[in-house]
Length: 269
Image (cartoon, rainbow, N blue to C red):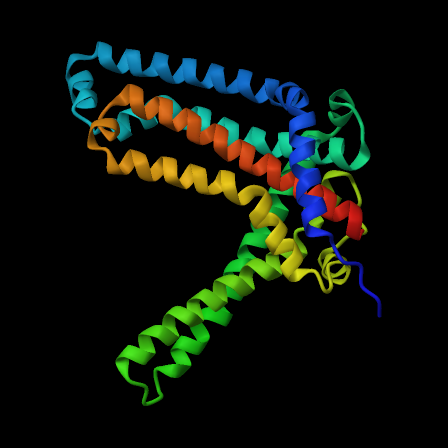
């Protein structure tokens, strides 16, 4: 049986080109979420001000670590952004796969976003299951063998790394159900996605790493920088600024990955 091969470099180039060409459209798609997040920040700020008006509770709040005070201002807005991101991604898939303008991606986007969330959660659970079986089961079995401790530690590391890799490969192949569901192609089930992506496990993984990996790593470095600088992690304004930037990078990572999956779906399905 002949399998279709995903052109990794061409797909990654198309991914970055689409993000660049549709940057203005992303602002349009994000407008509603940004407005709702701004309202959430205003409500949280008002709630904190009411708390500060109470002398006892206000003094207790000011004694909290900077991270907890920032969470009081941003937790509600973060939840709004995370939910809104699924709507944005669904509309982004439609724009890339169907070639329609941003305004035409709105119908039933919220319902499709709920399905997208459910499927993403299912993929995450499958990834965890694969990782545990492929990574931890060999470790458990090797405990009964007379293996020296130094070799056993390396085998444990190798087994866990193999489990993580197996989970990424499996989830990558099944991820075709995400753009398919976003555009209403319900014929692409888990089984169908596995069939369509046959022979492309490494190609999908490599393309995902090349596409969204750089922004993802930049976000990790940013959060590591915050933790490494006590003066920054103890300052509420600095934490607010860094959290905002981190959320923006998270959104960009999701959009880039959605672009890659959109092109992978178009090519394979």
